[in-house]
Image 1 (cartoon, helix red, strand yellow):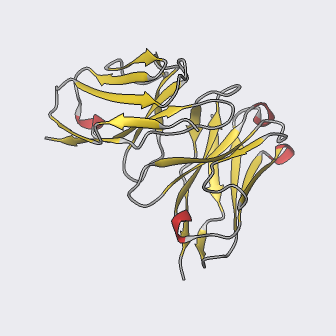
Image 2 (cartoon, one colour):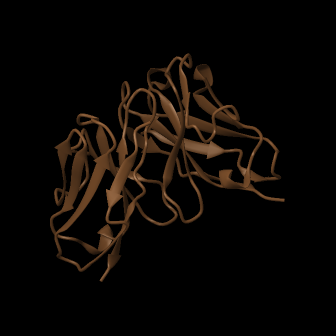
Image 3 (cartoon, one colour):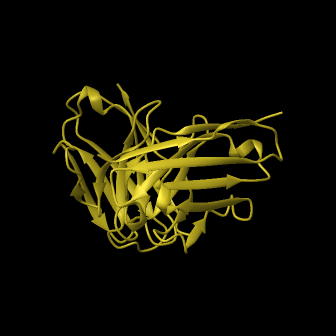
Length: 107
Length: 119
């Protein structure tokens, strides 16, 4: 089974900061990686798919890069609405394993 | 507009059974794989199971294999998760999610349904 590892688990940042979250896969997954944002009491919302493609309606301050086993999600200038938990996910025909999540908190 | 709505959750004793239902609309249901994802209280997301558009192929996480069964009713645009031999660690919010075409990412999610396994 493919394991996904995110870092850090928690991140404290201020409005306007540039924020980067890393996700590592236990084996090569090509570009089959998505990023989701989840706010308390709500379902996850898709931000990025195919490692770097921005979902329609998602602000351009979100970006993703990577391929193979290492991926990053960057928020170029953190906004008040961005404080949430972020998850990476590898997807294939067998499963859709998630990372353990990164909580972005107000500093 | 894509809409996904889960139902059937509730309180069940350890060892008991529960069937979750997911009603979907706004897309050609039989063309897309559907998935169940769960979230234990205060924890992260865990993929649980998937079913292909035709219903002929299913996959399960090791944690539920042999206890849970996913199925779908394409004429009525529904997906089901039959959960047997429930354990306390199965407690959480269960989300139904639609995949993009093929084996892609999860582009639409329901609001979730709570399952509590407790005596």
